[in-house]
Image (tube, rainbow, N blue to C red; front, side, top):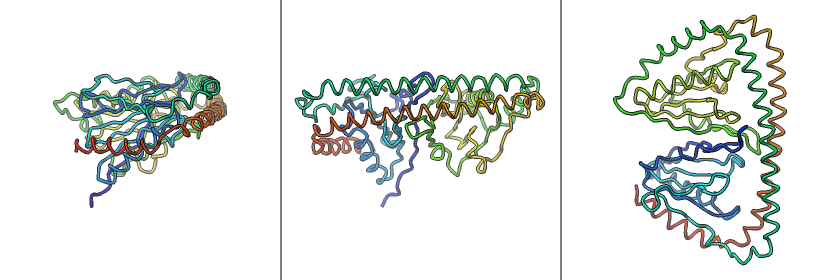
Length: 361
């Protein structure tokens, strides 16, 4: 009996201060994919369950599977990637609208609309439109709170920058580049970047899957400090260093502000850099960036920084509640769609798609 495959969990998109931010283009490389199935259909038509069933089947047969979770409802899926088959199945409906880039050759649309009774919508039209308006309003309201939270994060960065000793910072950066230069050996190849989220701001709060990405066998380095921009800048610098030397690098962005980076993984070197303090005990080394800051000036700003953090937490909690309200509205839509679906036909369709994927192994 084959050993069960490995699971990685990520978010391909996220609720950010900019609104919904997508890294869908990085789910799988079109040039390397055997097949990309793009699912179309409304809420409650079984897209997430379809992906979960196929993913479980291939996991049980020994394939590694990457689960791409929904940032609004982390229990649902936006995509799955079956690694050995080089196949992705993804949800191409709003807010992450995706259309085939290489139709027929690589990409294929799976239309779940053929499994519903279209006449059954006749009496629900106005209700569906109204629920969608309310759902959109909840998201837009939540994004306003995220904008305010991001402004406070900016203020923390401004106060931290006041205490930065530029000379010490440059010395720290150069010493870390030298320290990791040997690890980032030249491969002679062309390195690539892959951008995703390891965490998301969801209807259930901040949810992170970082523990599925940094496994026990990885060398892990933790960047610690008060300034999120300083940590992000250093993570990006290290990531680019590895890419320039021909290594493929995964760059995981901060869920609030996707312009910031919180984690970098170099898979071929089994190496991870993170600013997530949850990895304090597992880190091979903790690199404190605060030593590049002037302690007396940082202490002068400490009270303001702590106040910003407290207010940020309140704003984020209110954003989560708005996203929860949106999820409830989504549930109302599902109740309208579910009775109109022929799930027996969907299950037969799933078996046919799984058989096609199996041919790529």
